[in-house]
Image (cartoon, rainbow, N blue to C red; front, side, top):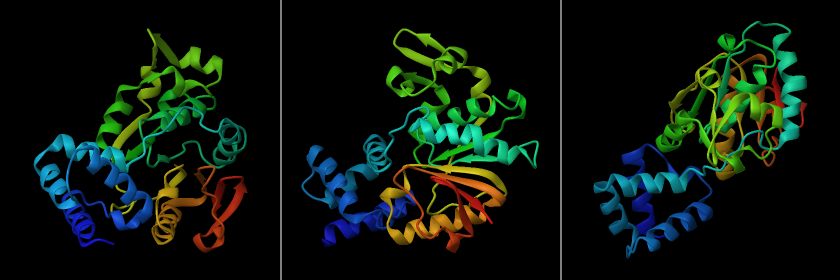
Length: 257
């Protein structure tokens, strides 16, 4: 690895708290080199000096690192399992479910969770904490306004009940918005709030190294209550769940022992 890139990674960690070495190196370096070249910088040193002074450039880089691709009910069959099997399992022993939507991007996932929970619980009993490292994504999530393509897997009756159409955009209802609290959080560096009944973290961990993934799985497991459920993305099957005190509950769902 070039000294130029190593120095950039070290400086970027000091500035942002994000350790790029914990992401898959080839993918990350390719992504950053492409952005650097597009902006017309000769090397990473020159690029870093500019983004250190220019918040717009820095935020654009954060956007490139954090892949904000999301939609409501993404991989709909999995959400049907959550609605028909996971939520009843959790409500068997508790009246309130503590939920964390980690790496929530622009908010489609935690709002989907709130909509599903509302099939079982009144709005004022639904509390979801949603976190992401990207502050711009969080600001967009708080707005709760989405293009039609973000709703393509959303059941029609849910779309009509929970959204208002504004020209070509859809605005989520204030009731559902009131269920979700958004916060900034770095999965690799920040503390995990304990005693969650359901943790959802999907389509993010594929970008991390195996060591980083293992660390994150361990932290998620510790942050779950006994019998709590961990829901991962469709490319993120955990091959040795027992080492994290987890058991398979359904495809891409794990139960804490």
